[in-house]
Picture 1 (cartoon, rainbow, N blue to C red):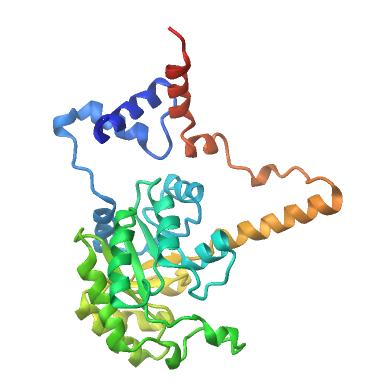
Picture 2 (tube, helix red, strand yellow; picture 1 turned 120 degrees about the horizontal axis):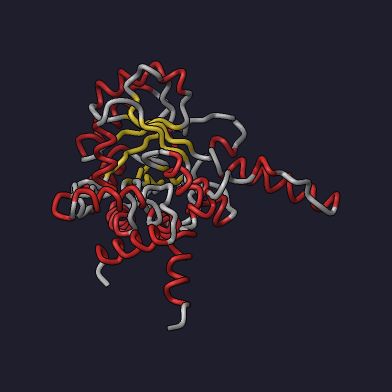
Amino acid sequence: MKQASRRKFIQRTATVAGGALAIGVGAAASAESAQGPSKSAPQLSKTQKLRALLKKPGLVMAPEGYTVITAKLAEAIGFEVIYIPGSMMSGTYWAVPDWGLITPTAMIEIAGRIAREISIPAISDADQGGGTALNVYHSVQQFEKAGIAGVHIEDTLNPKHADQRAGSGARAASPASLESLERMVMRIRAAADARSDPDFVIIARTDEPDIEGILRRGTAFAKAGADVFMPRTIKPDQIDRVTGEVGLPLLGVGLPIRDVRGTKLKVNIYPGLVSGPAVALADTLLRELKEHGEVASRPELRLRGDMMGQLTNHAIYSGLAEKWTTTP
């Protein structure tokens, strides 16, 4: 069955089952029937949607989508893009620290599984893309095929976050833990060359702590073909200067809205927003069960109404089950 025919069939089935999905399937079907197939507006790809968001005025918030369900929930609530962090992939799916231990192949598999199930774009962490320019080239091709709309590639060296492990408390990488500017530029060039979809977004990340170094690297990354600049240690009062001198949209990491409101920050991502509290809640519930032999009723922690049914396409599958299990 062709993709378009299958999509129309599923939409009709959802309507017959009496439940249009909150994520917009029902709305799309209604619009199509009202306008007619020949007058339907062309559907943007996920990469085109991300490009449009980058050009749109205002700040774009990209919450963490650490599972398929949380990504679909973010979409249902109204977010226009999600973020899939490497720290979450390392910790949640492999139970290892975010030191660059998991491979691009593992990241692509996890991120693709999430991104394929939503209609909004997903930005994914790609760490160093494998390290060498050749590895980056191959990784970007695979991220694109997996349905990711954009990735960020960083200039750290593995093992990552050595300063933090040493107990210094520093948020920024030391110069010794950064890839040379020349090699990082090669990574960005390789990433730009690898994409077959011109709308696939290449985000260049630097962990450089010094503002002059941030400007130097950002300018070089822009010339190499990056679409967005991600200076991880940037301060709110540096945003407008960096945006103006580098000439790329800026992506921040969990910067407080009160501090960046009115600046030129384009995207704010929120790694750990959901996955961290989810693990903490699991710890609380498991300890309560172990200590008391039961867990007190927690209705406030359950999804409202039939949201889980909507997120898991209950109406669609109910219609399919009725269609395919009814005997003639």
